[in-house]
Image (cartoon, rainbow, N blue to C red; front, side, top):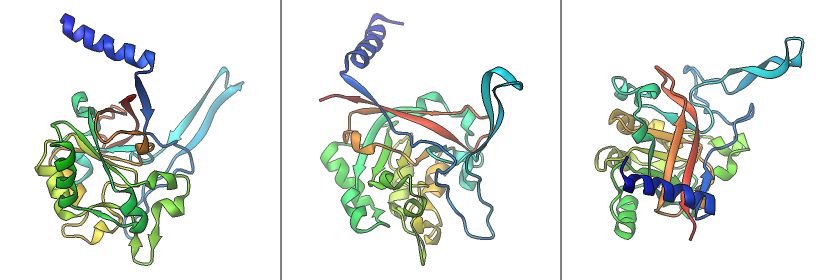
Length: 263
């Protein structure tokens, strides 16, 4: 490693230790009550988290405690791998995603006000172009994060899933914005505060669930149920996604961090 590379890493470590860089946890707490997506019949649904005690400082294991976990791949704050969707079925599983794709600059698009007035707000290409006009082109390898304030609902399943008479009503990109995110910029992935990367109404779009269809089909990644996006700047943070290295995995519960310079 060159002296320049060494000094760069040392500078980051010094900034974290000295408080110049804050590490923000973007992960929602994972419990047995974490909201899980609900698909209508006849589709199969994923289980949430359950745990069974193996031992707890007793005759089964006097000095240790541990549990058996049962959990779906797509529960809580989690990563969507390309093979999660039929358009990406020949792409990467979770275990084969390159580590460099899991780390990248964060570009935060704030649509909190719009979502407060319209819970099913649809992100458009015009929104994306307006963001770039103000903040510069989305860089290669970036994570685009849609900030909507939805994370404040994360501990209330009914409010979080927000299922209405005509189905779920949650924000996300429209069809053309989904196509833009997949093909017009060289993203690592797209992240949201909601239960899935697509809008709640996306099952009725053409194609259905366009962000899953285009984004994962293009080999990019999805990230859901994020927390604390209100603590990130519009640009300048570094995102780190840490899924299980699950061979054959279509997704994985993940711990997600952002390195944020203090201003």
